Length: 126
Length: 88
Image 1 (cartoon, rainbow over the protein chains, first blue to last red):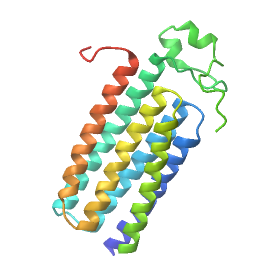
Image 2: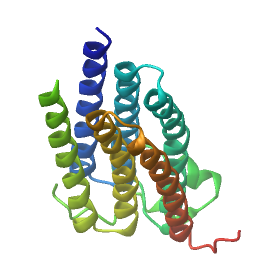
Image 3: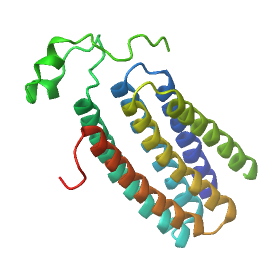
Image 4: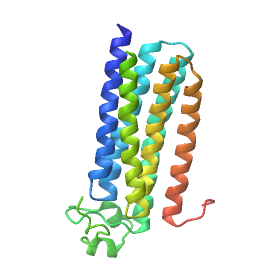
């Protein structure tokens, strides 16, 4: 019974992983890609590790899977936050249909606010 | 259940290939950085599935170390994108 529940959770995690990577390919901008990829892949990987914990129980394998789950759940959003901040400092602007850019307002960067349509990847058709 | 493990390997390999496509074709450096971070998190799940197939905990040690190194690498790439040195 634990095995069936564990494989169902692993299947849900695999679907999230696949959809996150499809979003990584299909989305038009760095920030939308970051949103799709990191959220979906973090939840998918955590689901896979939790499924391994459900199947094997609290043995050595299950406890290591639990430690790895907690570690991924803490570090992956932190890395995504750092990458978003680095991309903004690098000079990537938000998509031309975006409504607001709060970080640019906060650091008083007039070039980012005024040139909202200056997307470096606007020629991409994907 | 063994078949389901192989289906999981197939799905994870397809996801990793999509990430590699974005790393190869990404128009800017931040897009490649996002794909590298995503690939690191995917491979942790891959190591967990290999551990499930082997019924041993060795590959979960690999997964923990890989998660740590992937996090350090993503932070280093983000600092590189900001244009700062590593000691700030």
